[in-house]
Image (tube, rainbow, N blue to C red; front, side):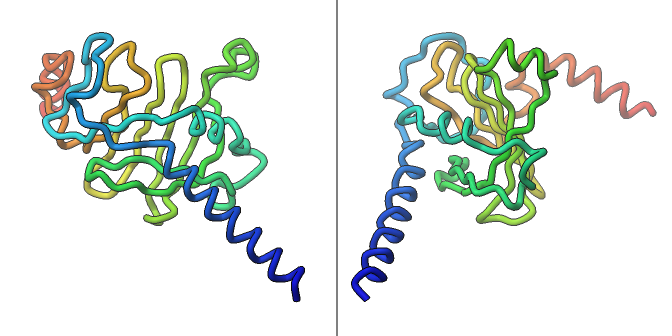
Amino acid sequence: MRKKLTLLLAVVGLTYVQAQTARQHWSSVNENEIKQAGERVIVPQKYKTFRLVNDHLKNLLWSAPHENSVKLQESQVIIELPMPDGTMKKYRVVESPVMAPELSAQFPDIKTFNVMGVDEPGVYGKLDYSEMGFHAMIRKVGDDIFIDPFCQGNYTDYISYNSTDYTNSNKIYPEADADFNKNYNQK
């Protein structure tokens, strides 16, 4: 009986520590506290700001199994990502390389991943992590969610926003969108 109780307490304790560690990857941060290191390229009309607290997210992503060895829905690697409404959502992760193996070996600090919603079944996305920071695109019915660095040169602070809050007037090349829409609508 004593061994069973000890084992149960160990499992509960480990689960609690893992849950706390996952929550500690991101913290909400007031935009006034963020140092603007470089140009702000992406400025949606509405967004939430978050700070990566430590390197645990990167370490967890680097521990994700390769998509050829584990199905996404069976991955035991689960991360939390900040949403534009301020909540955190859980996602299963597998590594999904887009570079040739030779190129991946040459640039081991660039990795891409596929994610699948745990809290929201049917929600999928892509992540990347490189010397340019962390990026996420989550595909949801009705609206996509993006997570991008707050500004160039600052890879600790991030914005989470809905794609509908990033309008043409906020884009770097709005004339390219206008040309695309004009040509597309003529067909």
